Length: 286
Image 1 (tube, rainbow, N blue to C red):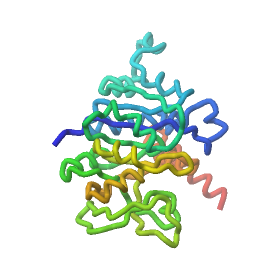
Image 2 (cartoon, rainbow, N blue to C red; image 1 turned 90 degrees about the vertical axis):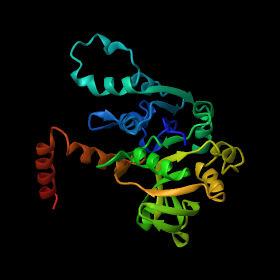
Image 3 (cartoon, one colour; image 1 turned 30 degrees about the horizontal axis):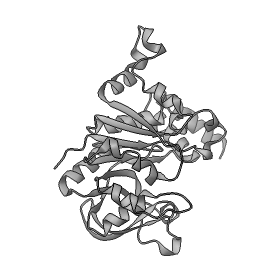
Image 4 (tube, helix red, strand yellow; image 1 turned 180 degrees about the horizontal axis):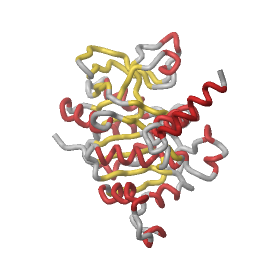
């Protein structure tokens, strides 16, 4: 079985929920503590063993390319301490880009990766999901699950009803440990029709057959959904769900962004001062 060495990161969305800041700054470049969101996602890919990374962007997202460039105006800086993390990251990965000129769905974004992935299995990591794991990185966990099963792997976790209706939800078959048989996937189901609370949360390992499935997928309001293509492979018994270990932050909304900054901030150099400030603020607002 082929080893997974490639990662695809769809990052073309306009980030309209973060306007007006995203009018000038890509949402993937909004900072979590002292690094942009996309830094954490690329680092997860590298730490998971991926050496080749394709970032799918839209026009106007040159800031992403500048951040991950190996050469630039900061080359003359002699003290590289503050640039160490990005220097190390770009030295370990071959990062390339493709432009999604028409924003017609996450499935259409993945289609643009066909020449990049070829006949190899690959990881897909949505550009507004940051996952912090205490064990192996989330993508590493899914890659290991792929090596064990040879199937498409959905990264999943249980979510309460109020959140589950926002995601692709798994129709569950048998469960063994962290593995769950996938009988179907329902995209953003009605509360009354929830098949379970096991939700697909922005991490996948896909196989080359996904491209044929995407080519035969019907559009919804002009968009191609990756979930629909994966559902086609479910019928061929080629999909499994894996409940990953890790805390997932939804950077697609402002509350998730605030959560991430507080959580990462509490592990940074200002931990003590931040805790004191939070306690003081809570007391003042009781």
